[in-house]
Amino acid sequence: MKSRLEDIVCEKGEFLHGSPVPNIKRLKPSETGMLGFGVYLTADRDAAVNYASCSTKDLPKRLQKPTVYYIETPALRLFDVQKKDTSLFKGFGKDLLKKASSEGDPDYVNLGRLLAETKNAGINQINRALSNPKLARRFAEYMARRGYDGLMCSATEQYAIFDPDKTKIVGKETIKAVPVSGYL
Figure 1 (cartoon, rainbow, N blue to C red):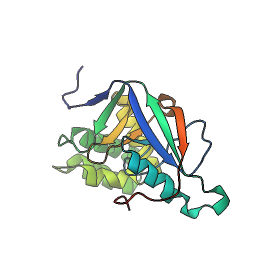
Figure 2 (figure 1 turned 90 degrees about the horizontal axis):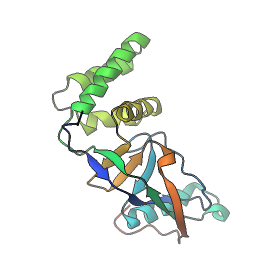
Figure 3 (figure 1 turned 120 degrees about the vertical axis):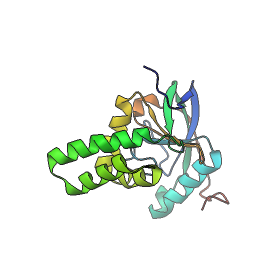
């Protein structure tokens, strides 16, 4: 069955990943973030450079080696969180409400109710879920069951790919730790 949503399908992707770590062999998913659980990628080189540079600030000087990784992916089906159609958020709310009710967790019940019953449930409500590692993983699993490989934010060209095996490091570049103007 085809989705009525306007999915974004990347045929074969070429992305970037910024990190303070210089010798990554395999990308690991972040538990939380702007898009929740997933391997974070971008199409914007300045954003990758900035993330790699800013991420070094808490590391000892000898370990500060910001690196931009070049990443390839197979064809991906992504859901753009900027879309106006919020039926998936509402569906997640109903799913969460059902599971949370059986587990007796009042916080998750309230969030599930908020997502399921809010007329314009959207990214503001889902961000609350995505900032919680357990909920972020649940949302990623919910979306994966519906055939999505990840989430994207078209406004920022940021991507969260659920399965790290769908990302392949094909190159890297060690950069000078200087944040790019306009990304602070």
